[in-house]
Amino acid sequence: MTETLDISITKNQNSRLTTTDFDNLTFGHTFSDHMFVADYADGEWKNFQIVPYGDISLSPAISSLHYGQSFFEGIKAYKHVDGNVSVFRPNKNAERFNKSAERLCMPTLPEDIFIQSILALVDVDSDWVPTKPGHSLYIRPFMFATDPYLGVSPSKTYKYMVLTGPVGPYFTKPLKVKIETEFSRATEGGFGYAKAAGNYGGAMLPGKMAVEQGYDQLIWTDSKEHAYMEELGAANVMFLLDGKLITPSTDKGTILKGVTRDTVLTLARDWGYPVEERRVSVAEVLEAAKNGTLEDAFGAGTAATIAPIGQIEHEGQLYTLSDPAEREFSQKVLKTLNEIRYGVTADPYGWNYMV
Ligand code: PLP
Ligand code: COI
Image: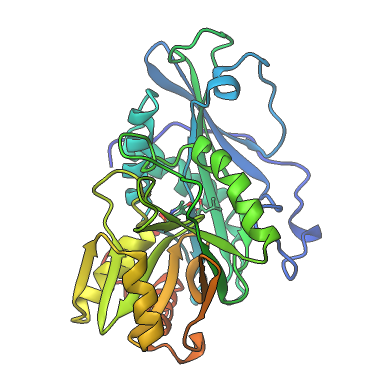
C-alpha cells in the first residue's frame, strides 16, 4: 500500500439499518447507508468521498449511456465469528478491474486506491455486514464515462463508485441449466473477459428466453461451433470428471477470469486433485453424465458462490445429475471456503483483507 487515501466522509443522518429486514434479502435490492465516489478528470483520480447512498445527477448525453463505456466488479465482505470483518481477495478484482478498463479504453485505477476505497466504505457500514450463515455484504465497484458528448470516442472524464448491500444466497436451489446453441455471449477478439456492462445487456434476451423455458441459467458455448463450454450467465462452470477437476480455459479471452474460479482451482491443486484448464466439449460432459463419470458440476462466482448444477439440457434432452447433497468435491469446497471467509479457520492463503 502507498500512503493513506484522503477520503472525505459525510455520514448519513437517516440510517436505514434498523428498518432493513435482514431475514428477507433479495439480491441487489438493499443498499447500505453509504457509497464511495471519485472523479477522473485532467488525467488523474480525485475527489475521494464517502457520502450517503442516493441518486446522483448526470447529463443525459454521457457516453456510458450511449456507447457503453461502463464496467463493474463484484466482491463480498464477511463477518467473522469473532466479530471482525474481512473482504475476500479484492486484489484479484483490482487486477480484473484494470483489464476491463484497458479493453474499454478507460483509465485504470491504482490497486491501492481500489482496495482502500473498499475497505474504508465497508468500515463505515460494517454494521451492515450480515451475521446469518451464507450471508455477506456484496460490494459493487464500477466505473463509467461522464463526458456529455455524442461523438464516438473515449470519454475524458469518468466516475468510479462503490455500492454495498447485504445479501443472502444468489441461487437457492440446484440449477437447471440450458446449454446455449443459438446465441453467443462473446467472440474471440471481443471483450468477453471484461466485466463490461454490455456483456450483461447482450445476455439478457437469451437469458430471459431460457427462464421462460423453465431454466435457471444458460451455459454459454463458443461462438463458432457451440460445441465447447464457456461459462454460466453469472459464474464460471466447473466439472469433476472421473476424479479430475475440469474447467474451460480463459486463454481465448471470451470468458471472465473468475476470482472464485481461481480460488477453487487453488484449493483443488492443494488437495491433490488433477486440474485441467482446457477446452471442455459439450459432448464429453454429456457423455460423462450418461455413463456416470460426471461426479460434480457447479457454477463458481462471487454472487453465486458454489452453485451446484442439478440438471443440464442440450438440444431437447435433459440430463439429471447426481444428488448435489451427496457430492464430495463441491461440498468440501463450499465448507472450506466458508470456514476461511467467516474466520472459523486460519487463512493460509492471505485471501481475507481485514477491515
Ligand atoms: N462469469 C460471469 C459472466 C460472471 O458474471 C461472474 C461473476 O462475477 C463470474 C464468471 C465469476 O467471477 P467471480 O468469481 O470473480 O465473481
Ligand atoms: C458477481 O458474482 O459479482 C456478479 O457480478 C454476478 C452478477 C450479479 C452479475
